[in-house]
Amino acid sequence: MIQILFRKEAEEDLRSIIAYFEEVAPEAIGNILADIYRSIDQLSSFPRLGMPVPNRSCRRIVTLKYHFKIAYELASDRVHILGIFRHQDREV
Image (tube, rainbow, N blue to C red; front, side):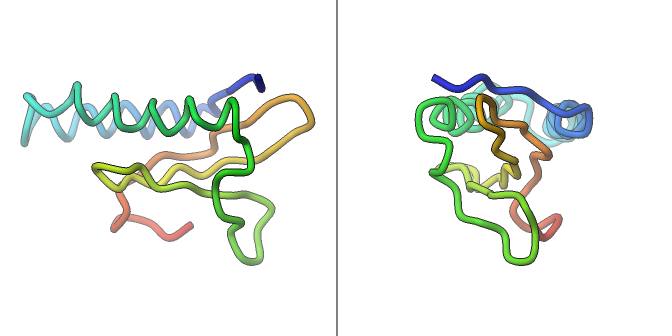
């Protein structure tokens, strides 16, 4: 199993997601985080699961239920989570 590490930008993305949904749908936060972490957990066993991002050195997956994008880079023994964002917010 490969180690998963979060860049500070990805940690900030998670805090922003939580803050946003605390305002608009606090009851959904648990389900949203479960969706995000389910996808990240899959990367520890299947690090090439995501699609390569054209013209970049990273890959991305989209969460199943809430369609958050998770951008990540592969190293020999770890996955670096670069960012987590709503599908419609940024392009990666």
